[in-house]
Amino acid sequence: MIISAVWAIPAVFVIAIATMSLLNLSVKITPPAGRLQAIDGLRGFLALSVFVHHATIWQDFLHSGQWRVPNSILFAHLGQSSVSLFFMITACLFFTRILDARERPIDWGRLYVSRIMRILPLFILVTITATIIVALVKYLDLDAANPAWIERTARPLLVTAGVAWTLHYEWLFYFILPLLALMRGVIPSAAALLLALLALAIENWSRINTVLLLNFSAGMASAVLIRNQTLRILLVSSAASAFAIACIGLAFTLCPTPFSASAIGLLWLAFTIIAAGNSFFGVLTLPICRQLGEITFGIYLLHGPLLFILLRLVVGLPMAASLTPAEHWLLIMTITPILIGIALLSFIWIERPCMQAAPQMHAWLSARMLRFRSILKKSY
Image (cartoon, rainbow, N blue to C red; front, side, top):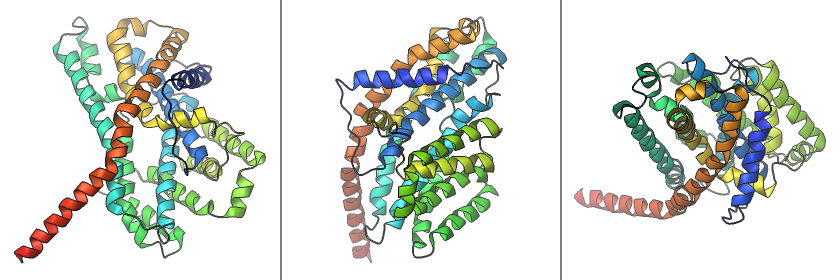
């Protein structure tokens, strides 16, 4: 496999932030108040890391024909450890709601409607796009002289970079939330234990990987720890920032398998520090980083089709395979502004309107449910 250039990682980050800064001059995005700002800033960097990870996989695929995890530990962690942190973010935020439920009861209908309106519209668009692209490759005789390339690349997996698998875990956690809420009167660690036991049971009849669910337990543990004000004060210090960065560095260099217990443990330590409000010397709470975090879902879902269209349909596989590593990464950097642009547009045109419509959708569904119940009562 071709060893990817490390310099591409900060280059992509800088280009993405610069692009977001320019676009923000005309299209202002204001992250909602009252959220954990450091986590908002973290999201954007995680999504960009997944983008770099899949660009590395493409670089190898062009030569080997195999879609596989990079043999570079660093570039493997960029994708898989970022997913681990995404899972921890989800668990921390939603378990915090459960811990706060005594003061602010959870409206479960509204919660699930908001999740559907947040995730489903853009996911459907990407799925339709992938289907159309696969049809074009298969039935319009693109690269007819290279049938092997058509067979290997005319698959939705390559079009989307296979990112949809993470949504299975996200929804599994959402469905477990009511069970965890039933235990909110018990010590919080018991809820994490329940999740671990459910994970063991589920793995017996599904393809769910228990190790990955440890990330959710870790995020729940973080939600409990950061409620301690004394601990929060300690975790927002500069020393804690240096310790968290060291933990990430150790995970990315010493743990061969990103989804190992040791890697998850190191990432959990770093994540807990961030969740407590540590901004990594002010970087994560910069307005531009939080604004980049707002379009994270678009970056995450749309980078796969963009890479496929660029390398498969625009440049062409033979030409893309002939590029040097430096040329490959220069090409990736040239499409980074495009990725940020389309992610921003998807947020403005699709994600934000759907999220704003969630309360009305919930009210409409609630009214229909009440009407249905009244009809049932009359029938009996």
